[in-house]
Length: 506
Image 1 (cartoon, helix red, strand yellow):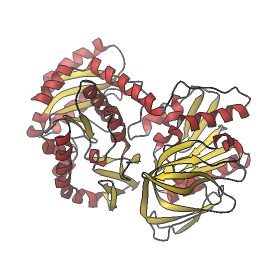
Image 2 (cartoon, one colour):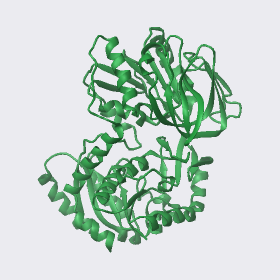
Image 3 (cartoon, helix red, strand yellow):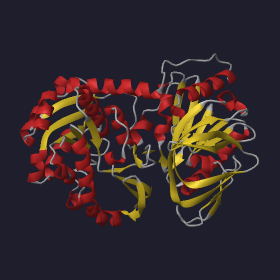
Image 4 (cartoon, helix red, strand yellow):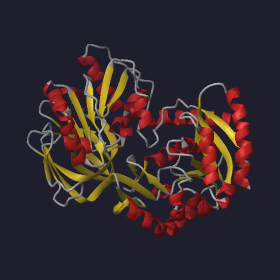
């Protein structure tokens, strides 16, 4: 059996996902076969594996750090909120059903045996299992039925390292409070503390660290500085929106932040391009004058369409299109740009029929079975507008959607899918408007194809009278791999690795 080590946090967004990814890369560098694991993840950012199974994206980038293929065994339970008190429950990569918070709380204990079985399987196949908790282990109202924090530590019989986020302030109180709210048995599992996201002079922090250790009787294993690395975000959008590009660049992209936005990691690639600034249009904000406007994926397309109409953003989007400006819709955003959306079975929110924005000649019908697949395709020939230079380019991505869209006569298919889940096919996908300025696709990850993205960006540059610009990124995958090395080195330099290995080998 492999050795487990678990990272829990004083709160959501403490940096657990990044720390787990860093240790996956560190252990890999040190010659170990390593795998990430999170028994239950709640996120709207998800991914489709080669087998067509759905998992959280946090475990995907951790798998990338470990240089292993993403596998649903790394995240056997995924919760995708679609209302304040309801979520879609995905077990071992497949939709199990929709549950209220209360229903899921009662259902959780029945998952413990499955989680134990999955964990034991990956433990037998690896030297080290790096486990991530969720939220905080100090949610005492959830302790009895916990399967993701101390409950998971019990299943794996794992030592726990507690992470505190100093960037938000109050880290000492958060760490002490968390430890004090644990049971004596749980406290014994906590073998060390990591203070994360530190900025400033560490000598000023050191007296506080000493006092903290005196209070909680747990050693501080390291203080990790705020890491400026360009890899996937944690599941909260807040930090991302607070750190938007403020400097105007040659190309400006705006993304409409839908209330149920999903897979916003589709746009990470733009942050690697020196000539691009990206801005998220949050509630109460208006669309500016970007070179490209993106309507992203959504976990509740119809409610997000209503939001666009009620907020006035729908009129702004239509005016933007009427002016001949470039609009791209991804997945739910693609559906929103269409003429009609039908939900006869009430899958989303009870509204059975609604007009879309009418910018693409498509109609979408929501069906009970979710489409989850990886695909490869080729951009079609003779595309209009700014997409003309993309013809013939090979792209890949993955689909996660409940709706099926049918193209009308005024919609030109964007690409031809040649491979779906490894099998050869010939299917039309996505579309472009007659005017050539509005594009829609179900493919998440389409912008990760650097040739596709850079060609589109250079077409925009040309339309603005700017010279083409190259990028030193040969592929987004290779770029991220270097970022994992960078992140691992930062953590290695600031954490007591000897103590970590002693913990694992104990």
